[in-house]
Image (cartoon, rainbow, N blue to C red; front, top):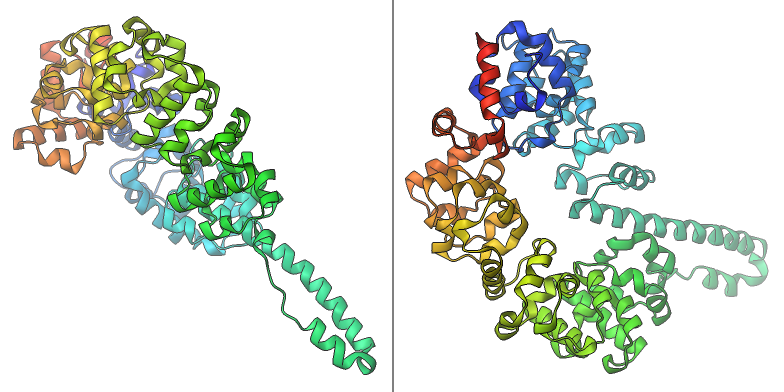
Length: 541
């Protein structure tokens, strides 16, 4: 065991992990404490197998009440794999320590989360009663659940804690963004109300001092209720602070924004990528009101408008002076097929571009807007230029027509799909969804674990896949198969898909006998399997 690299140990089949003798526990736990589990697919059966073996090294039988804080610390990242049922078998102090440590886990299995969150509530109380320090320490559990996030109390310190918890994260849930929006706007309103209270107190003192003389005049004057204008809500400072969370203003509030505030905050509002249609309608209307008609808008104005341009009609989009440099900023705005076509025509006209003249750099600059080309223009694209650019064209998907056109280019560039390697499939990304049924069925089984997870739900003709191809998907890809795709599969295919999700000793054994890569190693273990088996032979003698 001491000579077995940690990476290979992580990829042992579940049965082999369970068979490890107790004599190797000290070395096994040392390796687990330093192991980086990020290399393992999240649904790989090795994860729970490694966790169970580590617990068996630390405790005899299912009773975990004797575990200490030191024992739990020796689990390393396997602590993040624990289920609530396992945690409940620990002593209360060790349970509390374990949960506090798990709060910093980068990933907790989806199937464990509901029970873990409930365990946190029963152990530490409802989050509505937590102090700022407790929220800072345990808040990541709350953020795993949208309902719990939405139910967080609007306490004065909550916004700062949430900002701290999400600092550096690439993704935040819609529920969290909306909560931060409400915390920010409510604190802003509270600040205004506090200022109003001071004014009111001053007014009350004045009334009392001059009551006899000004009774009939001042009391009605100072008793008038305060009214709040839309401008007071949508202030420049508030809009700048909210950033991407400006998406939660209603279309009515956006419509009532002053022209001055709109112009001052235009770049911030234009950076928001997920406005609804009603919000875009108001913002694009205000853009014309403030900046003039579309025909008079300059390239710099279009750059500032950003995602607000998505609110214009297709005819207006075609008329806007889009530059290639502007496309990168508006790429994530949620364009539909007809809008992509209009933007491409606008760019082509403004930059004097022709499909047959597009070089690799042009295609990279266009990115998803290359989907806007018509069939004739797709056929004019230079295959060598496409081959050089394809690595930057693989993380978005076109409509079915566009996907098929990109697939045709891929075939011209890399050959028929039955010759594609793991590297080809990995580089092509979403382009693979353009394959027809015969092309999909012709793919080598070895490439299926290299298909991107997000591509899986978009693949058509799923029923043509063989048992070997389905088994080769691997745990994470198999978990992405939709219910509609599953409904098209036979019982034999469904069984193969299940084996891909949870793993199968029979499958592992069959892969070893055939010399093909073990599916649970996601392909790369094919290079090290002979050494792994040799080392395991020495280990288990």
